[in-house]
Length: 163
Image (tube, rainbow, N blue to C red; front, side, top):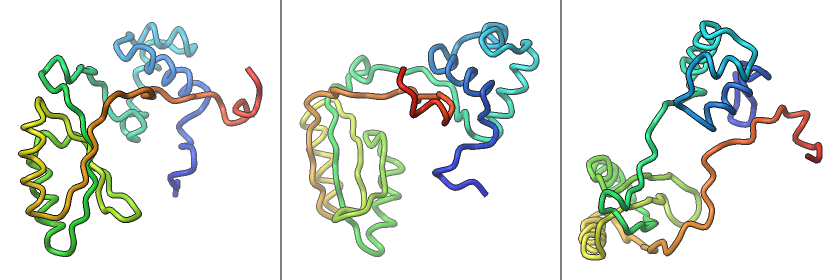
């Protein structure tokens, strides 16, 4: 069984090359990806299918700027809900489009949520709804100075080497 700290046996040097290229351009053709990894297009397609089946590749998506959809305000909301309130809160969150991500965390709070809204008024309405389930603590995000969207795919033996 693979634990969360182990690397999947499917991630060999060829898979690393494919994954690295996909991180750069998820729209690359099998032929183009195969050239970088030393595989034929059909072998590339089969290798990617195996990585998809193993949920190593979890999808291919467009990265849409939320502000272009009018969602220019991001907030982080921390919250705790006890007992039966927790189930009710989770049901509410599942149907709430403004909640874009929700993390179950350790510490003084049970949940950390990433929220995208169009206005401060919409954020206030959401906070008022959340009050039915517990006490939300809200922080408005001023900027995002760091976002990592790709992973370092060097082989484990190369991680310690200077580059």
